[in-house]
Amino acid sequence: MKNTLEQRLQKLKSNRWFEFFVITVILISALKIGLTTYNLSEKTLFILSYLDISITLFFLIEILIRFFAEPRKRDFFKNGWNIFDSLVVVISLIPVDESSTALLARLVRVFRVLRLISVVSELRLLINSLLKALPQLGYVVLLMFIIFYIYATIGSFLFETINYELWGNVAVAMLTLFRIMTFEDWTDIMYETMEVYPISWLYYLTFIFLSAFAFLNMVIGIVVNVINEEHTKERDKDLPQEPKLSELQAEIRELKTLIKDQQLK
Image (cartoon, rainbow, N blue to C red; front, side, top):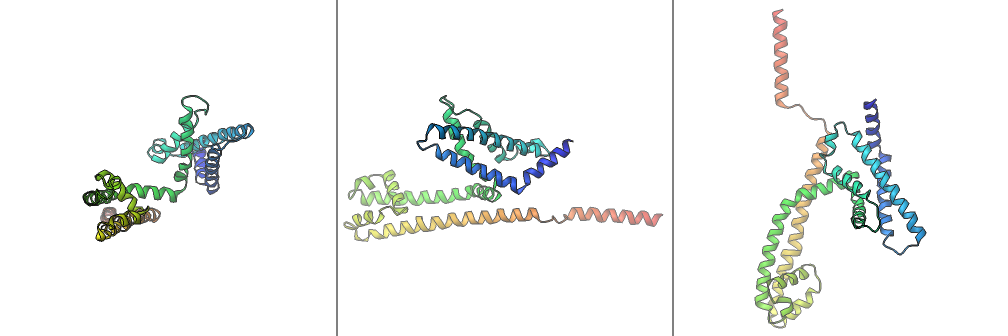
């Protein structure tokens, strides 16, 4: 009986129509949260409150289905996304009223949209790839900090007397460089310094090349490489695994033993 129920729940969990329905409910939940930011009538708010209760109950049932469909219940909590979904659902059970916990309940309901990541495998693969790329991206960020610091120091020495608000010290100069990297009125800043140092355009162009272009390409390259690796791993999981050398050697030894036994007989 238990195995039969578990098998039915597994079929329901992996059913594409059920997954589509879960995604639809998540999107409705996101729209409902957005609607509450407008000035609505009492009747509309009343309807939305009952809709919120229905959505919360559905998510609770959906989590229970996934939990009981797991052959080994402990494995359910080994998955980080399952823990995240469970926390969101449990905290969503807090009633949204005027109590001190109401703000927490409202904020957690916003994170329901992130449940799309745990439901849609492609989104989950993207997030996992980004997380695995973080260590490599850390070195790129460190390199960018070094470039920012060098250029900020040079800019502070050269342009402090031209515009103290933009180049007064290293910290302010780094903020100015961030503006330049994001192309926010960077030409106005450049033309201002060019009135005193006509060749200062080299300073800006080299910085933009190193930061905006080289930095962006490095980040894209790292992320794309990690995503390709994750896609390859996913494809390898679906392919039938080839027997290992040790397994083949063990089978050969067994065959030799059987042949010897037959010869002795």
